[in-house]
Image 1 (cartoon, rainbow, N blue to C red):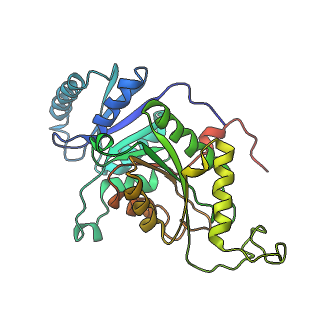
Image 2 (tube, one colour):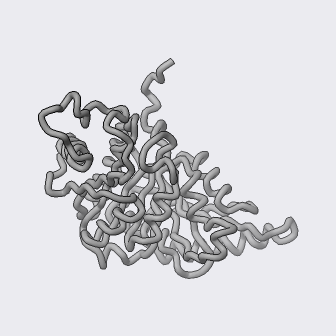
Length: 305
């Protein structure tokens, strides 16, 4: 897997004084002074007559933000114009050679959200680089050390590359910010049959004792934990829905962050796609770190024909 040599972080600034995303970047920079932070403001209400004045005004605002966050030694101001804010941000994230992006969570409006998805949801669904969504800049001070790594072992074709990327991210967060990695797996209550593509739970191959699916998944989790050096007491298996059990576990552990991926294949996450992470975000107090694509970390590998 490709090693990250330098951290370049893209931060989406929103209107107003409350900026959890840049506050989190400032916290990162306190422990990782070499990171480069690009503070991006996207202006979506403009015309050609006002564009230049808006850009100058915004650059002054970004200069004030840089001054207010002295931990960020490598602060890069970025002003973009685009009618569609999520699309403009995702395009910049894809083209700019960034390591990860940070955005602030939007407040939910149940009626409005039925018709137009919030900016954070739209970004979460389509961004191609790892994304950190921050709800409360002060959450780490209120919560415990736990960084919860949510792995989907339900997939017929489990992506171990995604496992590696998620673990690497969780380890960086844990090492730099005095965190403690826990790994969780949620077992779907749906009965998909014992021969769903994985021979391990087969009654034929294991006739000596019928096994509960939760026991099988506990084996998966412990095998994962052993591979990455995570204590077995930091493993968790729950039966239910991802969007219910992960928040419940976060509350129990007072987790400061959840790391999870999305899947385009079969498995527990696929029916909801990225919406699983969106539903988790709504219910937890800490941050959520999402990985949608992993190929950029394996560019040197030869793809199968």
